[in-house]
Length: 106
Image 1 (tube, one colour):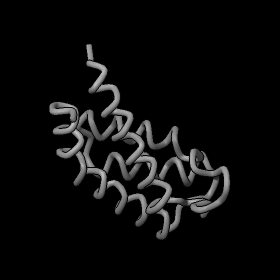
Image 2 (tube, rainbow, N blue to C red):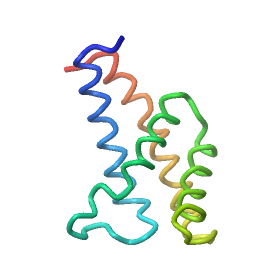
Image 3 (cartoon, rainbow, N blue to C red):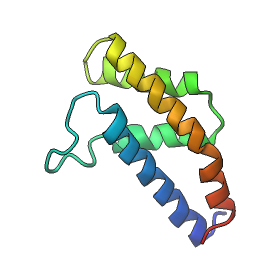
Image 4 (cartoon, rainbow, N blue to C red):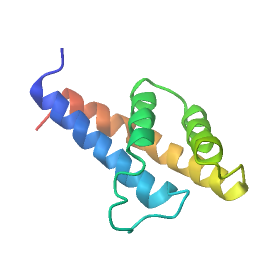
């Protein structure tokens, strides 16, 4: 069972993923809109779980693309596909940092 420190760190990691999705993915262009800061939380939570479960960048990118194209109804286009791919790679780059934080909370 995770300790209180690990739960806190997991929340912090998820918050970082949420911020990355808002800043770098943002398929509907709402970054900076008042009240929109939690719009992608559900997608960020799923992406975080996929990341920590060891999923590949391709799997995470496919999830993000499907979310934008199908769930948000934006269709598939090169801009969204590239952003999804770039964000997935960025998240993969953070996996070791997130794992280290969970193993050694402050």
